[in-house]
Length: 228
Image (cartoon, rainbow, N blue to C red):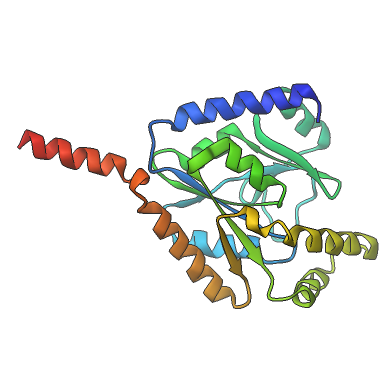
């Protein structure tokens, strides 16, 4: 990443912060964890259960998986297209992971969070700090752990979509990423998926009712009381 890329990201972050500055109820739930831990499935089930939680559609240069649809799970672009978007300053964050580029545009984030809504997204571990800096108190982070390293290896192996070399690289990276769990506000152990969904929804409900997110409701309550 060169200096120009960093400047582009900074401009996008400032523009997003300005747009959301008068929207205290809006926040992002950023879910991290190593490949194969089940964070994408977990997020999908939460999205299905919570009508006012929205997916942020990220952009990537990797090929879509069999179950993925363009514009639904992600936007799939060529490397040249992605780098052009970087040069235009459209990304809040972007990074190269396992040889592919991933990024999140200003437009995608604002569409998911505006009008006091909750944005839910899963990210690579290195994206946690980026989102914490970009959104400040509007960012709540959750790290998803596997019940064991052996279980994680089984989950990755069951995909059968990678070469042996790529698989071993992912396992090596996964073990290193587990050590970053304490960067997050919350930790969920994804053993039983239904339990993990319940835990995630409970966190969302708790964060919704923090005092700083209820400012608009409180203001209108006090204002109306004074009018009476």
